[in-house]
Length: 210
Image 1 (cartoon, rainbow, N blue to C red):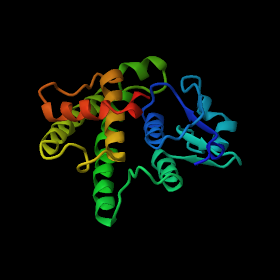
Image 2: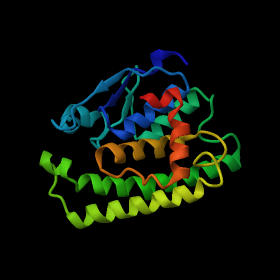
Image 3: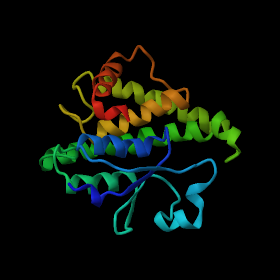
């Protein structure tokens, strides 16, 4: 796919959702021009940025004609439609459904709990963005650890999150687990050997160096 269709990806260093897009694009050998915005300074809440994404969040993909696409999965689906190979969302109806199911589990059961632990943790509190609630931080941490155990059990039967190959589900899980490990003090227990074997496997991919 020609690079002129992909102009800017608004991002922030260390943020897991833009990293998901960057890994996805790298798997497809697509180049995205990264424009880092300062979340701490409120750059995503300015009137100019809110024209790009009314939610005031990243990532946002801005095309050559000024069209902006928000939301991680929406951006990835756009990239998949323009560069179908390698396929990361499913090759046939059954595989697509299974990948979607596992991916939704990751997005709706793992991501929010890591997010709760992060938002109510000391780093965000020091920024003065929100008033932390310790009970929500602890609940998010506990549910995250419980999900790690679940993933460890599931990965006893397969090498990847959604089956026998690398997909969008692996990208989303990896980015959030790495973020949780480095920024939220929620690294998986080293006793979860299946989870760590998966982590080592997917971390060997050149795309994941983003």
